[in-house]
Image 1 (cartoon, rainbow, N blue to C red):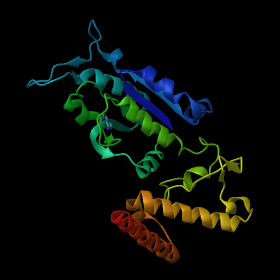
Image 2 (image 1 turned 90 degrees about the vertical axis):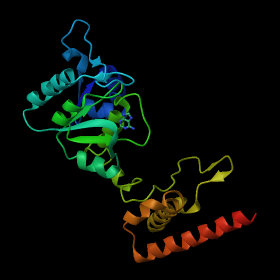
Image 3 (image 1 turned 135 degrees about the vertical axis):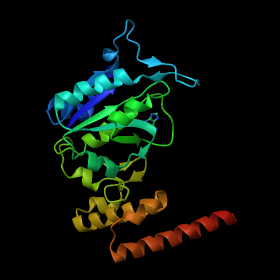
Image 4 (image 1 turned 120 degrees about the vertical axis):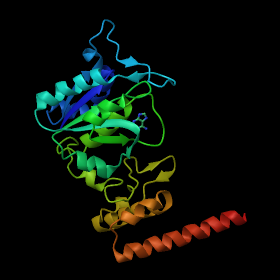
Length: 254
Ligand code: ADE
């Protein structure tokens, strides 16, 4: 996976992405990171990339030409069409399934805006996808781009080292992850659940599956509509929901 990032703050991207698991992915050549400073394409004395919006209003806009030239420097180098993602609160909300889809691409270009946005005409010309990471407004597109790159990176084969883990995690099957424990067996008077010490793998798998279902019912019942459960498991969901309702009415009566 080759990430290309158009930004006014290339160091911000590099310093985060070159750490930890993504950093190892870059070192091992499974990922590449190419940051392009949009300011390098502002051909005026002060390397200015922003201007006032026509029609008035608060704030400044990033101008079309430096953004376009920065994008073109990547597009021409690649020589084939590449998805260009503009980070914006107006975009489609990012999700694990979108990450899976994007992880199939060879190259991705991220366009990070600043100030009050970017001249609409360049967005119309170069952007293929607008993506939001949630219903809140950040000061720029760098953090959202890094959230997306981090999520996509761990789906690139080899980046996690352990090929199993992306599949057993929260959201991969529309279920939340089960709780996990490590040594010591008792900590602050809290013992590890007995079944995990039993060495009985089938029982451990069953317990983990039940825990995943229970957590999803309690914390994120909206995810269940996409979950792939057996008939018996759906029965378990109904039982848990009934118990939860009873708990709630008991609380209301206190
Ligand atoms: N830029 C500012 N806020 C954003 C958000 N929530 N998602 C993506 N890009 C943004």
